[in-house]
Amino acid sequence: MQIAAQFYRLSITFWTGGITLFTFILTPVLFKSLSRDQAGQIVGILFPGYFRWGLACGVIALASRLVMRTSAPVPVILLVIMLALTSIQAFYIEPQAAALKRQIPSFETTPKEHPLRREFSKLHGISASCNLAVVAGGIALVVML
Image 1: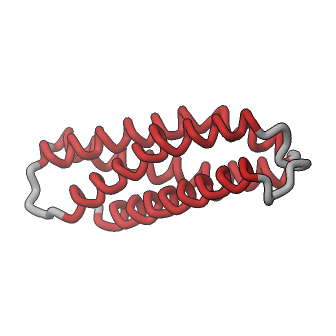
Image 2: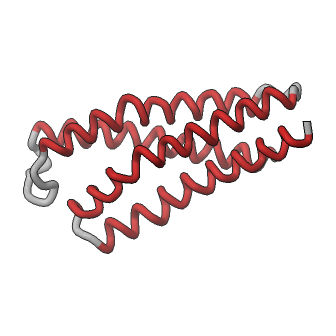
């Protein structure tokens, strides 16, 4: 049980720390320092690994929590929701957004009203909402440690 508790704490803090660093530090710095197209290309390259990291940490956290057999249901419920949101981002939103990005020659020159840009913006909004919900869930889990 002690080892499971250690894995749980590590996976929650690694997941929450990683997602927070990527969301609130790395991505804004890239978009502030580079052109929109360059920053978007870099972030697009990083996204598959970013989501795999979240899924791996989430699965380890959930498995560890289940092995611990504590009676508190809230952490397990939060983990399931966080994993579901990350899965939606990894397996549905990101592949569609990446395909759209390949069809848009440049975000700097393609008007925002262009149908592909609109569709991309819609997916980006959904993904950002999912991401913030996962960050909030992770912070809640860290507070509950």
